[in-house]
Image (cartoon, rainbow, N blue to C red; front, side, top):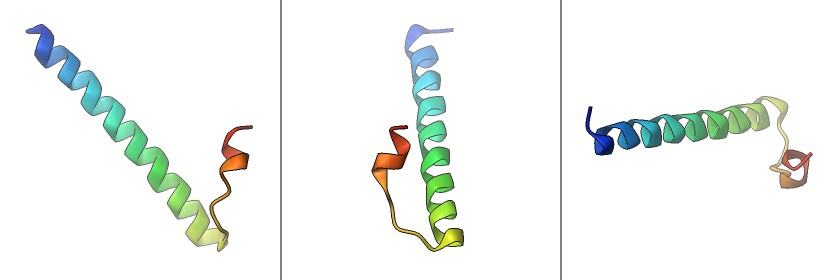
Length: 43
């Protein structure tokens, strides 16, 4: 396996993980009818 391909795969996994986290936050906000509160994420 080439090094470039390996690192590209890691970047894709990280991008999907971040998208999943963002979708989870959006889903929770919609179902609970709340606004985004970033101070809660820091805890």
